[in-house]
Structure formats: C-alpha cells, structure tokens
Image (cartoon, rainbow, N blue to C red; front, top):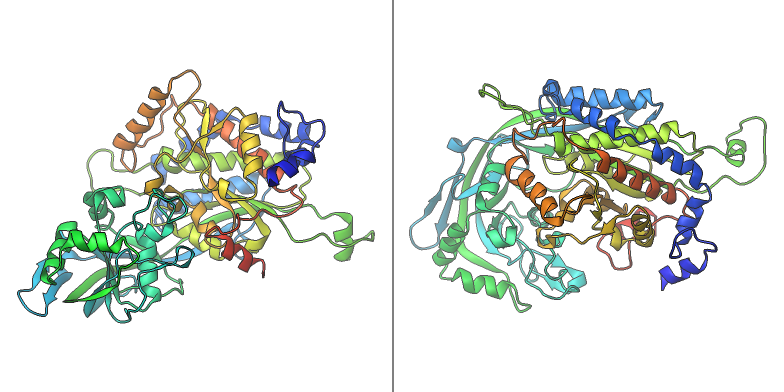
Length: 574
C-alpha cells in the first residue's frame, strides 16, 4: 500500500513502469548525477585493488605494519580528493584500542567433573576451543553447568530459554543455531536469526552473569564443520579493549561428541535433549556436572584505525545566517543531517613469518575490491561538484576479519549521530569476473527504502535475488550488521551468479572455485586479467542510491516490528 501511494505522486516517469517519489526527487537533477556516475572507472578500481593487495602491505593485519600502511594510503587518497577528515582530533583516523588474545594450549585445561563417576579431561582443539574475553592472562573456573537449550531470549516470539533459571556465576550449555522452524514468522523459518549466532549466545550468557558458555557444535546447524571452529580459534583473536559490555571468562565451543558424553554423565540422552530444546515446553536444567578450567593466554595490546572521511552537506543561506555568516540572510536553519554512509573493510589476515613460499594473505578479492570501490566512489562524489543537501560519509574499517570489530566501534562512535545516518551501503568481496546481472541486497527489504532499491536495480539491469543460504545467517556476518545494531538501516551489495555473456553454471563455478581454493588463502592474489567492469557498475548503482537517500523528504526507517527498529527509535529519542 505504501509503495502504491508513492507511485501516485509521480507524473511523467521516465521508466516503462512508474517510479517512486524518491526517484522523482533524484531525477530532477538526473543529468548531473548521471555524469558523476559515468565518471566511475573500472581501470581506476583495478589499479587501487592492485596496490591494496600488494605484498608491500603484508596482508593488512590490524596493528602491524601492513595494516598501518594500508590505513595511511586510504587516508591519503581521501585527502587528495578533498574529503574532510571525520576521525579523531581533525584526522582521518578513528583509533580503536584492541587486545589480541591467543590461548596457550599446553597451559589451558578443561575438565568435566560429574557429581558421581569419573571426570572427563578434554583436549584443546579436538574437543573444545575457548577464548578468555576478560582480556587477562589467566583465569580459573569451577562452576556448575546449566543446559539452556538454544540459549535464546526472544520476546517477539514469546520464547525464553532462561525462564525460571539463574545462571549467574555458572556455565551455560547451549545448541548453536535457532529453535527449528518452518514458519517465516517464527525465528524466520529456515533463515538464521541473530539469536542463532554463537556471538549472541556468548553475549546473552555474559549479560545474565554467567562466567562461561559452551556452545555445542553441529555441522548442519552451524553451516560449517568442526575444523572451521578449531582453526578459527587456534590463533590470536581480537577484542575491543574499551567495550563496556559484560564478558565471559570462557567463551567456548565443544564438539558434538563431547556434548553427547556430557549428557550421558548427567543421565540424559543428547538426541532427546535436542528435541526437547526445540519445543515450547522446554525448561532449562542444571546438570550434575561442573566445569573445572584454567585458561591461559598471551595478551597483546595494540591500536588500529578506522579511516573515516566525509563530504559535508552544503550550508544553505538560511543556515549560514544561523551561524552568523555575512552577508546575513533570513529563514530557519535546516533540520538534522540525513547522511549516506559507504563502508568496506580494509584489513585481512596478515602473513605467516618464516614460512617458505607465498606466506602473505593478500586478500585481493577479500576485501581489496571493496576498498578500491569506495576509494573510487569517494573520488566520483568529491569531483562531481554536486551540491549536497546531506552529508556523504566514507569509512574503511579495520578488524572485520576479527569479528566485525572496527565497524562495531564505528557504530558505537559514528562521525555524526546514528539517528542522522539514513543508510549504510557496504561492499565486501565482489569478485571482478564480469558484469553482474543479479545482486543480493539482503536486509534492504526490511527498510522503508526497499521500493527505491528495487526500482533502481531494475533501471541498472540488475535482478534482485534472495540470499542463497539464509540458514547461514549471512546478514550477520559483514560490517553492515554493526551499523544495524545501533539502528542505522544497512545492507551489503553482493553479486548473484549470473553474468553478461555467460550462463548461470559459469557464475556458480566462479564462486565455487574462489570459495574452495582462494577464500582466506594465500592464493587470493591480484589477477591482471580481472575484469572490474561489473564492480564499476555496482558502484554506479550505489552512488545512485546514495543520491536518492540524501534527497529523501524524511529519513529511512526499519519496517515495523523489525529486530533493529527499537534501536533506531532509541537513537531518534522516540
């Protein structure tokens, strides 16, 4: 109904089908913005990616020389284009304090000790992995274990796994993923909600005063095998030093086989407990087993910056008068800013010292492409000469590979109030293999801006396709999510699998080859044969959306009842 009302406001629409009022506003200056979009160059994007992924930058790891070089290079590019600094103390750098934690396996022990019977000693890596979120070298735990099903407190679904149980000072045991559902209105059906993410389960346990959490891994529920959990938690993990949220002494995963033994020690059957946890009649239960643990870690404190720049909105005459600028003019000052934000993460996995051969994780696709794209987008906006009614902000964020930490800090410390950022558009790992005919913009459909996204995609010859793996919860795995959490409408622009001049099987094969042979591998290197024409097209699409955003009569909102609506309303003081 809302979309139909908008359509009726338009007369003489340039498209075959009527467009929204949003597009009408933008099209009043269509030749100007079209010229700016046309200036976006695939070759410039290619050259930027070539440098960002060069061996000189040593894999762009946060807190090391390569990451610092990358940040300085990005800031220099922003400065050369005339963008204003939007970081700390008049600089382009928003410094983020981090602590790197690496478990020392030979000094870390987990023992499951039942009230009756023989204790079970677990092996780090094979049976469990753990991180000490309190950022101390050593922590010791002796606490009872409480099974809390899926560990979710979701009032909108009338579901609370913690009802009637006190987990303060205890260890929660929970299943990865959401309660099973085929109903899109109940835990999003087959799609994963944030309640199903392991990050939420750790956060919720800490909020309720637990000292630790054991997340039970199961491949079909996690969408990845135990080896992914093992390898992801064997090296250094990074945390925000100044995060005021409560933390766990032991944020842990356990293998499914260990969980089966743990239930058996308690006189319970794992399969039956899993089935019960998926029903509304489930009740949390304290097991007759304690976790006795020592977690020893090396601690590394460091800084790594987000690089933030902006094109401020133009001060009209009435605002100039309000700021006592001569010559004086009359009229009320305009309302709050309504900025568009473009983000991409610049960090990657660094390098392996002393390793023979190619030991640098160059990350040319992940996410040299995204960085190159927002640098070219910043150039196009800055050189356009367009008068901006609202600000345009660019942020190259750090520590995405460590858990979206740079964007989390950006969300908590935005360059303008969160309520004054109308939309974040994120670019992450867009393979430069041709011209896309499809895009995925998961999350956009949850906002009032979606009709404009649909109309613009159609005009650019881009079919919007759904998330191919909703059960994996991809929306919660890229930097736009950090902005969503503080209420800012946000989504990533991702490619589908259909490209000009090729059938779908070809596109699927390209994606499969990258995921299986290059993703987070030493072979993610710049390829001179790469074709960035499609990435340039997605930049023009993003610029067009941004132009519409800053001309909206009011700011974008989450749809009523969306999980991020409350954060948006809170930021707006409602």
